[in-house]
Image (cartoon, rainbow, N blue to C red; front, side, top):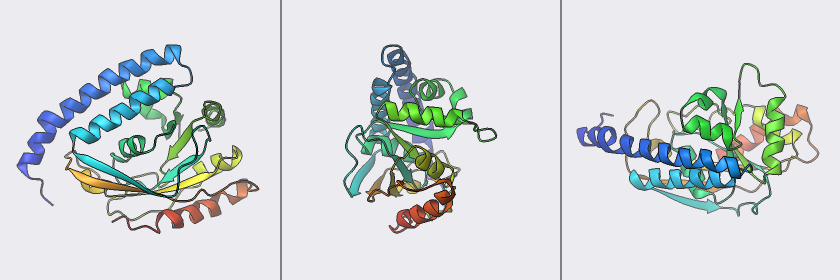
Length: 239
């Protein structure tokens, strides 16, 4: 599908500069706040403000539906399908809880955004050598009363279909005794398609599913748990 010239010009000369300003200003505020707030709560407020500004600027609306969210301070692992770069601001704007993401370590090298991720308690993983540091970061997150957001497909879906879930994050949940809360994101791929920079206004719906407990599970159950949660996420139309 070709991109209308108006959408291209709007993205390049207005949206990208605006989002850059949001990232720099709120990234700086976030960094300064971590000097005084080691829990990362103020940094998270900056991340929510950043997300809301991006959505408002690009005229994207978000609707949260389904089961009740866990209470504040009750750590869990939110697991979602991955349709677009917009999925992170969508979830940060929609879910009023302390959230941290698990992402590849290379993101930590980006100015402002990467600095925020490193200082605010997000879980950055070197995929080639994850090591025991990941479990330490998870325990720190739990002590802060925060919850993790993960996209276990490992990549964005080009057609909206929910792909195979990798077992790694489910192993982390089992090891740390955290419930899994499945989320289904629908509509974000139409806002920004995989491999494209241009954004379009649109509506995104996030469905919250009932929590899946990990109590009583062992490391060997991670693969089966991943498949079970994937079926829950895929039970809602995403295309």
